[in-house]
Image 1: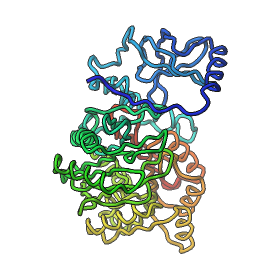
Image 2 (image 1 turned 180 degrees about the horizontal axis):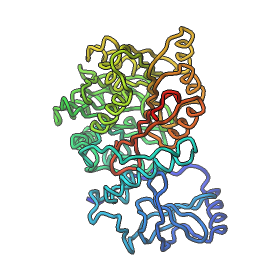
Image 3 (image 1 turned 90 degrees about the vertical axis):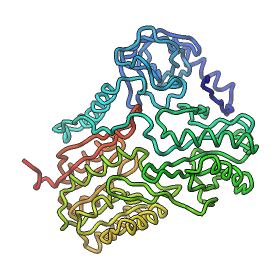
Image 4 (image 1 turned 45 degrees about the vertical axis):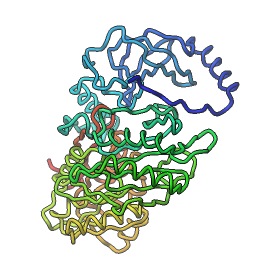
Length: 485
């Protein structure tokens, strides 16, 4: 089937945009809509091909280093030019002979999927090394090869998908790069097969039951997003329909239709999000099933997962991440551990069997409620969790003169605020385990911790998302007077 894209309505002043485009064309010698012959030199940090023409850097999504290609200019900005890959004139030797996804050039969600897997791993390793090499305090680090999961395809157990089009012709997929155009996903090779099954059935249900699809342009319709989570250990599926209002009848009938067609769907939730913008979840959940969680197993830890729980979308990669953190924490049952940004408790509960006490801290109250349930599920009586602002709780812990042998940091992509790192250093732990999804912010924060007396002994990149530019890392820091010679 030919891949489909539902284009979004264009906002802003068309005349102003045309004027800006003409000005940029005049300044660059390039013109929108014109195809140019390019040689791709390298990839940027997001896996997008970089070439040069007319003295300007041109970004070509889907292109690989050493590709000679024909690319059509799609956007000319003040600082960057974008182009769409039209034709490979001389394919790169880094390319697979046959790409596992026929829609890769259109979707652009997995920009490395056409690259040989060994080359993907080498590129990610070099990406992390380059981030560390920017800081003199980290130049002693030699980044090893990535820890890799067994599966390179069909590994994603979570999908957050946009719904577009109309009930007569619904699109369910992801936003195309730098746009609100929705790429309709028929059979994504990265998704767990059950996710693809749910997408097909929901698409069928929307049409059959005439469920109104939300229209961003005029703010009409109901259904905005579809979120699917699969538990590989229990073979259960959790589905969340995100709608602009409660819409009990429409979503209730769609949920029933889905469960009749896919009996593995154990949890169905309607989330209400009437706000504008790109945030998927609203504040209110309404369950359409008696069961409200599914249970997943990561390594030796059992985890109850609710609709808005954060859990890595790659079970094998998550296990490698958790086990590396446990092994590097150097615990023998006598240590106090503080786990910051603990989420639903995956790392804390992995450390609990080899620690004396573990305290997890997380801003999200729903995640902390999940973590407490997970502690009971795993009989981790030495593990407790508190909800609140990380910086404020660190102040309270310092005021109470509590001390921790090991502190785990697992912040969002933006990394840790400087004030948080300052407070962490005040505890003077023997070890810090830093888990990060961004090599750039990880290196920045490790350099700052070096000024606080903590030496980075090693880092281990972990392959969490094959075929994409994303890479997770675990770093071990020790107080400088304790570092291994």
